[in-house]
Each structure stands twice: as structure tokens, then as C-alpha cells.
Image (tube, rainbow, N blue to C red; front, side, top):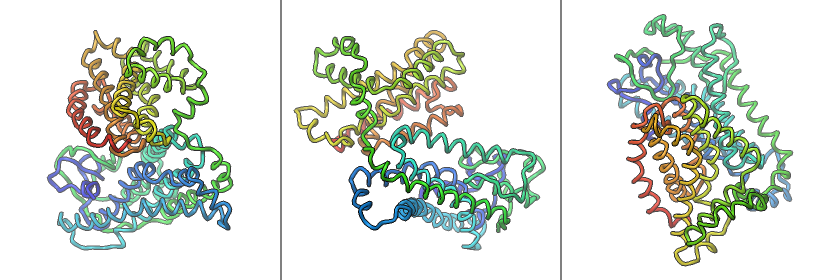
Length: 486
């Protein structure tokens, strides 16, 4: 509800959501409010919604519910379609809440008091629904494929989401865009852009008709707001065909998972870190010798064990990729250093996201935390582990920037400390790895766009200030929630 209300700023606000050139937006009619919600939800809810709904098939596999269902008369295609439908209903609940808030915003903002439910719902059905249908399909596939069920799959879906969104943006930039065609991405941005071009609105000057400066999300308002009338949207046959194509593709893609259900259920969903460590426990024996000085105290012994558990779980491809990232940190130009630091943290994302909830996921919490003061020692050792990994993965960056860009080096240290702290805080609060993974990939994407969040070089002091301000909050969240992990 809060996010939906944020989509309809007043005329004197300093930001815009769905707008052109940071100046132009439609009046808040039912048609425009439906368009705003359709595009915002088709782009943003298609990302966040994936992390909210995925896991239902995995839960059936892990709890042996699927074995019971498979022995019944249940038809497999019906089962996967039911899962897809449950995802769609969950996502539609958010859309329904947004539409109710949008109607309230239309009345409160007072720019157009005429309520037209058909114009309100039409964009959501033709522009927003296809994107959510594709998201629901990916949620089913990523549960069926064993190697995509955890952190690796969450990262890969984010990359897919970026590619689909980029494809739509590039299509709107095409000088030969067919205004009556059906080819579009699942998000509906192309269909909306075609509608704007066909409308030939007098409020939009020729420059705005020629450039592709469309904002879907949030952007600063650049000048005096100009509002144009948008009381109806008349979709073309191509818009309907394009929406039907993506919905049909989502249904077909979901049905294609049904032959693989028995195979998928045969693979247990152990945490990746534990699973890989069990398989590769013989590797890196020299770590025991290297880390033996730490084993003089209880805390040092725990830290040594944690480091061995993490590093032995790394496969050959990971070590090769990590070596490439370290090489880029060492010899790459300064413009690449920030990306190399982000890449190092991304390679360790599964450790950061799963470390706080490892005992819960493996069912060993009751045994491990039964020892005296075990929880304090384990979480302190785990926080130190995450610090060692965050700083160790960027040690070359810190050393290289220490003399030439000391603020950037300090920003790298502070961000590493923040990543370790928020890993435990979000894990304790949510008892899930997904919120941290989602937050990291979103912030990493924003940082690539020069936002001072995880970007250590664009505005180092802003990055430092942000993380230092939020650090006490992370500590407070963990202290209030850490017992939930036991």
C-alpha cells in the first residue's frame, strides 16, 4: 500500500514515477493510474514477486508431499498449473491492493474525479499480467531444476530480468518501431510507448516524441511539471496479440516442467554450502595447517572451522572466476575497480545470505545451540568469518586505493563491514536467505548506475556516510531478532 501510494506524487513533489523527460506526466485519471500501476508492477513486481512466490515446489519435494501426490490420481500438468496459478493469485493480490490505493489517490489528488473501472483495469490485464505470468513460470522452473533452487538461481533470475527489461528499452529506442505491431517484451513498456506515439499528444513537444527518455520507477523532476490529458487507452490488435503471446508462452513453459517432476524430487535441497562441503571435504587440506594458529581459543577454533567449511565448498570454476576477479583488481584500470569489488562480493553472496540460517536449513539448530554460550560464540565467529571474506575478497582493492584514493579504500572497508552486519541482521529478522540476496542484487545494479550504495568510487563519502548511519540499525535488528535463529 505504501509503495502504491508512492507511485502517485502530488504536483509539487520533487520526483515523478511514470513520466517523460522528467517533466511530462498524465493527469491522474482512472486510465493513467491503471497505466502507472501496470508498468510499475510489470517491471518491479516481476522482480520482487519472483523471490516472494518461489519455493512451493521445493517445499513439496523436501517434505515428501510430492511422493504422496505422485502416488495419487493427480495429473502432473494439473499440478504444475496449480502451482503457477497460486503464484499468479499471490501476485494479483498485490496488484489488487495497488488498484484500490490508486482509486484513493485519484480522489485525493483531485486532478480527475471521474471513476472508470474498465480503463483502470485494462492496462493491468494487457500490460501487467503477461509479465507476472512469465515471473510465475520462472518460479516453477527454478524450483524444478536442482541447481537453480538457491542462491545461484536467485542471481540468474535477476540477470534474466535485467535482460528482458533492457530488451524492451532497446526496442522503444528503435527508429523503425512498428506502432501497430505485436512484438514486445513481457513488461508492456513497448505497448505503452506505441500508445503514446499514436496519441500524438499536443502537450508533448517534438523533442519528447523523438527521444526515449521514459521513466518507470522514480526520477527527479527536472523542471515545471506539465500534465497532459489521458482519459482512455484504446489497445490495438497487436497489443492484445502481444499480451496473449507472453501469457501463452508462460502456460506452455509451465506445462513443460511436468515430465521432470519425479527427477526433480530425487534431488534433495540441502544448503549449497553444506552440500558442497560434504562432497569436497578432502580438498584444501593445507588450510588446517594454515589456520592452526587460530585454534588456540574457542572463538578462533570456530572461525577456523567456518573458513574451512566455506573454502572447501568452492568448486574449480569458482576459484578460476575468483582468480580472474583478483587479477582485475590488481591490474585493471581504476574504472574497473568498483566492478571488480562488486564481483568479489557477488561470488561470496551464497555465504553471506545462507550463513545466518544454516542451522535452521539443516535442522541442526537444536543440537548445536544446546551447548553453553554456543549461540553467542557461533554468531560472533560467523560475523568474523563474513568480515574476513568481505575484506579478503577486496584486499587488493583496499591496498591499491590506500595511497591514491584513501576515501575509496575506506569506503571498501566500511561496505564490507556493513555487508557482514546486515547479513546476520536480515537473517535473524526474516529467517530466510532470499531478502539479503534480493537486496544485494538490487543495490549492486543501482551501484553500477553510479548510485552511492555499494559503489566505492563515484561518491565515496556518501557511501561511507550511508553505511555508518545504517550500521546501528543492523546491530539493533540482530540483537532483537537473533533468538529466532536458534
